[in-house]
Length: 450
Ligand code: SF4
Image (cartoon, rainbow, N blue to C red):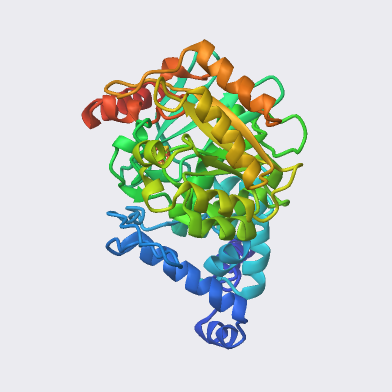
């Protein structure tokens, strides 16, 4: 017994748990590589982002910084959420908390596997990590998931989650199942600055950017909900991701890039870049970077072919016009006939749906020699919207003209309309209920579970 207690004591000693004495830490600090320094700088940046007052988002190039009114707040309990950290950042975070470098490396590898292959959210389940170290990890870190305030399922199988961050910000994710695929529509911001006039999200003010952890957290939560752990490449329901939820992804570039890199990592969620699509309303200066640094498929919310109409319905057009946007598409790295750029076109009655506009669309796409397909989206109405949906006959004729021009132009079937989950409808659930009402629903759910 005595011996056992002694062993337990040794196991619980800081050195046995791999917690480096100060001298060893100082020595290891002298040996850090340039990459490690960059990672530390990144962690410091993430921490600063979580705690400092919001500053304009730094986007390099000749575009104006986008003011982001609020920064993400640190967790109230002070623990660090490991979701959203790259492998190197995870190792650095463990080392910064006191693990010796070799042990930090090993633990990072193990924890990564548990998080992204097994979907674990509890350190106690990590059977290849010494039990004595579980409390040490739990005291300092958390493997988070967004809080689900409301989960809805449409009559067509579409699922929508209203999610809440630890600092009380609401955002949404939507899962759209099809016969041969399942697509998760992911949000990148709480609200949006761009005010596209046909989009309900655009009537929300921008609250803040989502962090990389909150973006990849939507994927983790969907996989929890679909029962897709442990991770396996075959037979998944969640096969595709589109960055088409709330927000403009290219106005939150760093977090979106970091999150998508996690999603694509072959040791974890392992989704191919060919199955991920990033949608932009046309933040032209960031498009080449998106192609080079993320390399996923590109979708462009075009929605109009004349300056007059696009200025009205996608106001960003006043800054980056149609020609500039289409040239950036032509220059997009990796676009070819096998990986065509998708042009989203919402069909608004008597606004952008004439034969002449369909012909002009074909002309423009040919002029810029774009490997393109066009998605025609019947407008999904929302209360107070200034537009109506084009008639089915008009949509059909518009589609035929584009097909006749040699460009694929399928008409998208609206999904999840009954739960306000269709394109351009996100926000409704978050704002149609008051905060008090949402809190009450969450409390009732909690009570029912408990
Ligand atoms: S369409 Fe996209 S970019 Fe435009 S307001 Fe809606 S969420 Fe923002």
